[in-house]
Image 1 (spheres, rainbow, N blue to C red):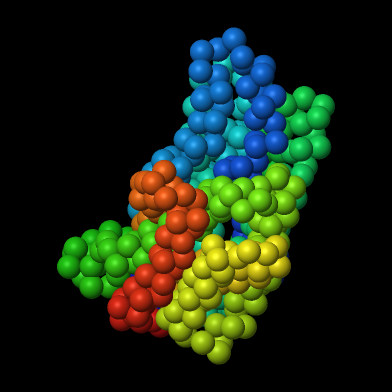
Image 2 (cartoon, rainbow, N blue to C red):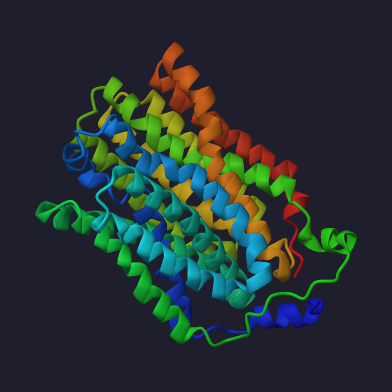
Length: 400
């Protein structure tokens, strides 16, 4: 196996600027996979109305991705050690484009749902591999900055793709599936610009004990923390609209404006992550910004005015926005480069599983006490995450 010094050296090799930009182009693909079809889902349901349970199957095109993405994240890290991160990423992008565009030609609802499951698997794998390449191929001093750019590109790009699908969907719902072909030129862009370092899989032969000591075992603490972080993000978007409706701010226009406002604050904070990280440690960022996010949601729950709601969602968006790149940046820094893809796959799987786990408790709170208690529960989870970061701080000690 490559020595620590050699691997670190390879990881520190500066990527060309265009290669870093190419990696950031992958950011919007995740949002496109998960929510890109939303504008045309009613038309798809109408077209297949003669199918039994057509509405459920169409919604499964989105919800079914969650389980598929957990599987894809788990698989990608281990598989990349056999075939190489860049090679596997290029294969995933090609499959992403073909599976995503399959709905343009398929006329069977069950086959379209199946193609979406395949899309979920390769989408999650591509996200893991993109972050693994950023954290192993970009020099340490620029790693956090490019992680922030990657997340920001995903946020802004997803909004752009959603608007594009809404436009092309006016001329036929099948046109929306063609947008997924964007993954193919991204694959070409990566192949042409990634020339910094060889991407050969590690040689086998090291014993299990050595691999575990070096970071190759299952990082249970990091997976648990990833699950908690994932529980906070998606669930907020699930329950916040119901709380807003309960306080008289539930019209689609109002909810959309509030969510976009929160997202913009999150993108702004994420963009600054690389510079903030130079001032504060990863643990300090977790504690500070989870507390900020929790205070923001608490303000939303207590708000009696529109102004206070906007202040609250701004605090939440900014606080949570910076914790996402910090999670993967801190996990990467605490793991030897040759094991980062595996670790990121496991942590990202926990991140994807978080909303499914948290929903069990939040649904019970919603039914029994109302949406304000559910949002308050998420606020409490933010404070739990801040405390957990302190408890697990030694697990995030950098290895470099």
